[in-house]
Every structure is written in structure tokens, then in C-alpha cells.
Amino acid sequence: MKYVLLLMGNLDDARCGESEEGPGVEEFIAFDAELEKAGVLAGGFGLTDPEEATSVTRADADAEAVITAGPYAESREFVGGTIVLEVPSLDEALAWAAKCPGAIGGRVEVRPVLEL
Amino acid sequence: MDPAAAHEPRPDDVLARMHREEHSRLLATLVRRFGDLDLAEDAASEAMEAALRTWPEQGVPRTPLAWLTTAATRAALDRVRRDATAARRLAVLRVREGTPTAPSAESGALEDPSLGDGSDLPDERLAMLMGCCHPAIAPADRIALMLRFVGSLTTAEVAQALLLPVPTLQARITRAKKRIAGASIPLAVPADPEERARRMPLVLRAISLVFTEGYAATSGDAPIRRDLTAEAIRLARILERLSPGDAEPAGLLALLLLTDARSPARTDTEDVPIPLEDQDRTLWDRERIAEGLALVERAAAAPDAGRYAIQAAIAALHAEAPRFEETDWDQIVVLYDLLLARGEDPVVRMNRAIAVGRSHGPEEGLALLEQLAEEPELRAHSPFHAAMALFHEETAQHAQAAEHWNRALELGGSEGERRFLERRRDAARARG
Image 1: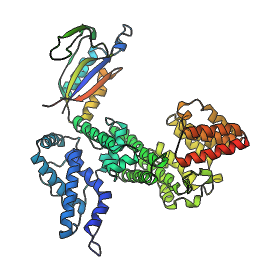
Image 2: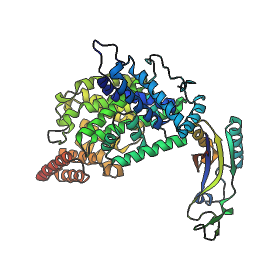
Image 3: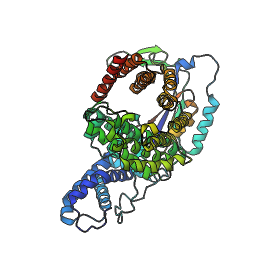
Image 4: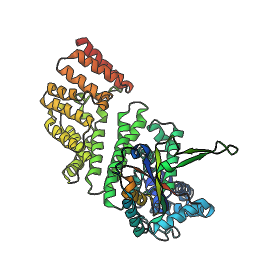
């Protein structure tokens, strides 16, 4: 079964000071390698700073698109990246999520991928 | 299963008896086989219907459970052949069956439903209990699922017992089933021993919550609540039997048996609660106590004894005392200290304070209780105020006692409980 690990960050944490106390890029690269070696990695991507985001919304099918700078203003959470796993059951996905550097001081949301 | 008896068992009797105990075994076996709760339930009821049709003519089979499992498997296969969605789900299952995470997989079992005489069918209810308490399942849903799939209560009975409207409970169970299927939450004993060790406390807690729901009986119909305590004991028995050598399941069962043993003496004819010090101990259920004490002896001495074994040991000390005055309070205090060493808990601290009061005098007990007065959990906890009231009375501070009885009364409770608190408050006011 395919699961996606959504690596969630929080804007309030990211803006607290400049020092990078959380996991760095090297940790994520190492984690990716571990997943590859275990034969469970099935996709995923990292994302840049939420500050570089642009939001697009349309009220309905006839409305014009409204474009605003930055991520969706209401939520403090943002997606930092994704990892797609192919594993036999939720337990394996949860075990990997627990090992993921993104879980440290952050939140990893594990969801089944919709199989069409 | 029933060996051949002197007379032929009647199908209705067998099915009635089976429906309670064996239905949960059947369901658990089917869930393990198909990995799908809905399919398992439908297949189980089809099998029961087939039994009701054919057993009166052909007689009751020698091993009814094996017969039913075979019939249910056939019914499920038929359903799968007719229904593309079910087929897709089973196709996913067949992939999983080949992996180490499905220990009871028998390749081809779905296509070859012959099971021999079935007497060695494993009891898969431990898998169900552990599965229902998977951390990915919300705690409120765990109890509903356990009672529905391992318990012998109908959905309506579960709803009544948990004081929920039936549609609410049904919606909750439906949503939980959807999550289990959608996220592929494994309903199994965790293969990893560390994960298994982490899961066991969740199962123990869920079963003990079922018991507390029934035992506290803050409102609602008394008979339904007694069903819950019986269900909890039944589930604890299953867990204990299927976890031989584990101390905590034995501890839980002991605790429930010893606590339940006191229920004939707990309330008077008007449902007014009788405090432990005034209970007629000749009414206590001696059989339950004997069973509980035997379990405690094993569990409390074991190296993996934990919270439930300790609580059972405390209950055992109460059960062994011929009179309240002869209770070994010093030993009880020691046990509460052991319990607290495993984790701070205001209610446990409160109970320890009461035990100290019984052992060293009400002034000391009161002093310890007063240290806990600011604990938010205890401020809204009726027994805390009752304990404060009692110790104030015993130190001749009747006005304060009356205040605490009143505070307990304000926190609500069953009609009988309120009557008890009113009487104590009025008596204290009269002396204060």
C-alpha cells in the first residue's frame, strides 16, 4: 500500500529566531537513503520556504482567480515536503514516520494514497 | 467444543450458547482471514443463518465452530465474486497475506476452505483486542469496537451502556471501520515484541474503562450497567487466557473480580451507596474473591507486574480483611507508593492519603488531602470531597464537613448517591 508522509511545519516555529536547531538537509538526505536501501521509497519531493509560496483561489467556476503573496494566510501550518512509501500496512508507514527527521519538533501526517 | 453428549443438543440451544461466546471467536477468525470487518460480519451472519436452516434437519455438527467458519468463508467468497469492490479489497489482502505481518496467513486458505475438524482453530480474539486498540484508532472508538466485535453485546446494547444514541454509536463504528479499511490499520497482535508491549497497556486500559463505565453507574438503567461489568470481566478473561504468563492481564482480571465481588454489598435496597466501612462483608462473592486472590498471588510476584497487578494487590488486601478495622492499611500505603513510583496521579495520591488517614489517624490523612485541594482533577472529583468531609467529621470539624458533603452533592451523581450525600450533609450541619 502507498502512503504519503506529509512533513508539516509551523510558521510560528520557523520564525522563532534564525538559529537552525531543527534537523537540516543532510538529515533528510540520509533518511531518503535509508528508505531507498529498505526498498520502500516510492516518491516524494522537498519544498522551498513557505515565504516563496503564492496562493491562488477562485470563489466559483465563473470567478476570476485571486492571487496573493505567501501561503494560505489563515493556517499557521505549512507543508515542507512529502515522502511516498510503498509498505505492507500502516504500521510500517508509522514506524518510518517516527524515524523521519521531520517528526522532530514538527508533525508528520501519514495518509493513504488514493488508488484510482 | 461440546463432546457428544448423552442426548442430541438442540440447534437453537447450541446457537444461543454459541452466539454469546463462539460468535466472537468466529468473527475474530474471519477478520484475520479477510482483514475486513464488514465482510467478516456479513459472512458470520450468513453462516449463522445457514446453520439455523440446516442443523435442525442434519443435526448439530461435531465441531460447530469449524462448520461455521467454513460456511462463512464460502459466503465471503461468493460475495467477493459478485462484488468488484470486495474483490479489490481482497486482492490487496492477498498481497499482504504473503508478508510477515500476517502471521496466520495460509496461502490459498481463501480458495480451499476445508478446515479439518477445526478443534485446533486458533483463538484470534487477542488479535482483535490488540487491533481494536491500535494507536491510530481514537480512544473513544476503541471501546466501541471492542464491545461490538469481541464483546457479546448488540449495537443497541452497547449504545445504551455507553449512554449514546444508537445512531451516534453506529456512525462512530462505521467511521472507525472506514478508517481501518482505508488506512489499512492491521487488526493483529503486533509482531514486534516492543510494539506488543506498548499495545498491551492500551488494551488493559480500554477493558478497565468498560468496567468503570458499568461500575460507576452515575445514571442510567442498572441492569444494562451490570452487563458492562460482566462484559469487562469476560474480555479480561479472554485476554488473560490468551496471554499466559503475562502479569498485567492477570492483574487486571484479578482487580475486576475482586472489585466486582463487593457489588452485592455496595448499595442498599434504595440504591443508596454503602461505604466500604459499613458494608456487610458476608454478602461479598467468595468465589470471585477466591479466583481474584489466586490471580493476584501469581501476578503481584511476577517480574513484569505493573499498575494493574499493584491495584489488584490493594483490592486483595481489602478482600482478605474480615472487618474494615482489620484492613492492613500500612501495606496498602506501601502499595500506593509503588503505584505512584510508576507515575504521578492525583487520584492515586488521594487514595494514599485516605489509607494514611486510616493507618495513622484522621489528622494526618486530612493534612495530606489538604495538600491536594488545588489539584484541578480533584476539585471536580466527588470522592475527594467525600473523603475531605469524612476526615473533617472524624476530627470534629462538622461545619467544614457539611461544606464538603455539599460540594460533592453539587458535583452530581445517581439518585441513590445524591440521597446518601444529602443525608451526610444534613447530619453534619446538625452537629456543626
